[in-house]
Length: 179
Image 1: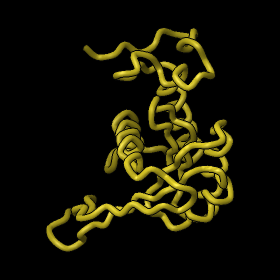
Image 2: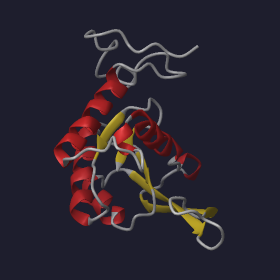
Image 3: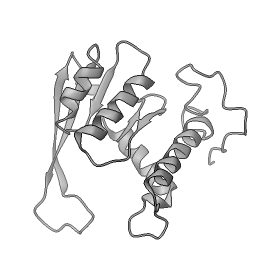
């Protein structure tokens, strides 16, 4: 699971695990620790455990779920999901704005993680041999992404945009934006 701020693409929290309740608790606790605002909107996918987990940690927030309904019948390959036939938007807590319910930026972030790190690519020999190495590699990716990589319309790294820093990390120049 990955938590991302919608406007500045700051990666807030991540958890590598199967989708069970215990890793879900760890992820939501990390996300709650990373969020400093009182009132904001959270949108998740349709994993049922998010209802109680988000309610426990983000009681004052507007929380909605974007549920994708897939057609599993038909010609699908081993690693591809069915075709999405419908999206359902569901308000869970508060009054989330349905026009802002979106998981596309997180899905794009997941693609960036998979494409930027061989260990996340299926059927490759670049996989991690230990969970600790895999987790450390993800933490390094988050650090590079948040503090050193200049992003599209932001023209800066995600880190200064929300306010904790006023300029990109001085340890090195940001990775130049492709022309």
